[in-house]
Image (cartoon, rainbow over all chains, first blue to last red; front, side, top):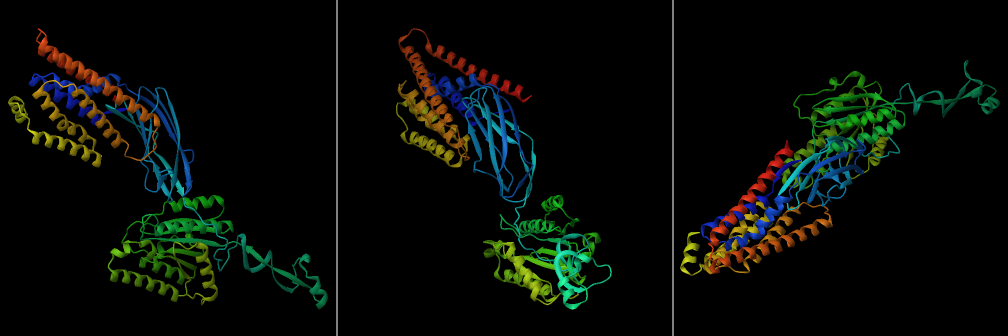
Length: 424
Length: 162
């Protein structure tokens, strides 16, 4: 352990030294009586100083946690030597808080004591964090020296976003060729009844509708809808960020994207992710539970990277955007480049839905500090971009952070039902 | 020390200067407690001890002097503890007991030690030996002991750092 003299040692030593000097100069030993308690403290304290030996581990049983849920850190310390006071301090990164708000844990161990504690942590935001080493500060019995040591090794913690269970999703307009849970427009083998038609050579006898056949005298068969899956691409606009300190546009977008990915993968759709911003990131569409974790891991790395480069949709790899894929865009409509890319996607015939994450509510008190005219221009610019997309026939709904995502999706579904069909 | 020495030699006490020293010491203590800067505590002790030193120089040994020293030791220990306990967090109740026992024990021991020193210095007037020399030698031995102990402590700490 690294040793440092305390303010107490230096202070008392100075007081005693000055008193001794004065006693010698004035030939008055009575001055020593005045500082005798301080001198005694130093003598006894120096006699009691002993080098403490510390062995310890700080383990994190789980390397992954979910936003808002408690996870433990196990601390095991073995201490040898005479120690008056032991302080344990963990300086956590922003976004991870201790379960009980405590900066320091103070203990008074006996020689040979073993300290076992469980420190409960609670991540308040998704992301990748480094949990630092635990700082152990030991003091000798009279606190003349303190000894410091770092315990454990820095550990990476991946905090997954908390997702919302969505009961109904945005149904894609077109389905793909793989089997899934979505009822396709095409007829074939399936469970969902579609229509009755005349018997054709090749039809299976078990599909004959005997009642209609008996009534008409001509063989009729039941036709069914195929059950297929669809391709969903989650488009995250990561050009700009608006943050209220605790929540941010990107944070909300990642939470929504995780919920959507979880919902669509449950429906056996293929889900891909595009992080469209200063840095382009993508994850090819895939399906299954394993892919959900791939999506979440990809989303954890999403960050806003400042860039002045003009990005168009052609920078996205073609495999990322399968034909007839449904693109669900999560954007605050703050950057014209992302709005241009969305319009381009729409013109290329992709089934596009835009969930606009409203940044106004995240401004909070900061909005009061901004010039009202500038704020109004900013709001009008966003309205103009929204209007441009809406006029092109793109379903666009606004998501205020205090509203459940389910409601926003319901709005998007209704919009697609009643609004004019998107035309290229 | 010049004015105080003159005051002591002249047989009168500069009351304003003594009060100013006391005030400066108290202000230093308050500043240390408010700012949490523990390095201010020991320098604040000096102006608090200085008037008593002047009184000792003026009027000779006083039985209450070690008690004043012990009181200041207890006050400074409480101030150190108060600043050390600033970051919020749980603490073991045993810590408080240990602190109390050590402060009380060492303050009482310091008072006894102070009285012994006073007794030794009082013998000077009645004795035939030049106790000033003996007392000075004892002080030097004490200083050497403290230095030796601290050096030993530092050497051990250096080894532990290796």
